[in-house]
Image 1 (cartoon, rainbow, N blue to C red):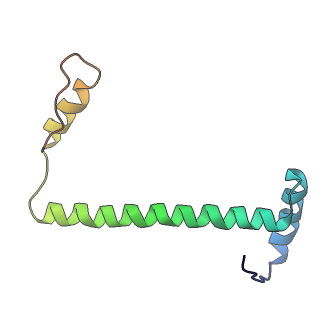
Image 2: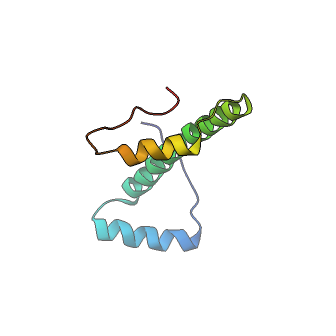
Image 3: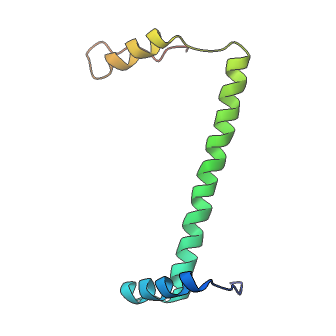
Length: 88
């Protein structure tokens, strides 16, 4: 396990200490959890951005599904005659 030093701003230090005490955990644990969650969120954002760029490229290439087809498909959900996803 690596060791990293950080300087905390005063307005972060006090709430961090309070949270650590409330959770009966060390500040190290709380900081590690916060960083872990941040990295996971950034990973999700990276995937969303990549998917957005792919979707924009697809639209520019003329590949799209008419709104009416999407709405008909959505309205069929849960019925006995559910439609196949449009565009496939």
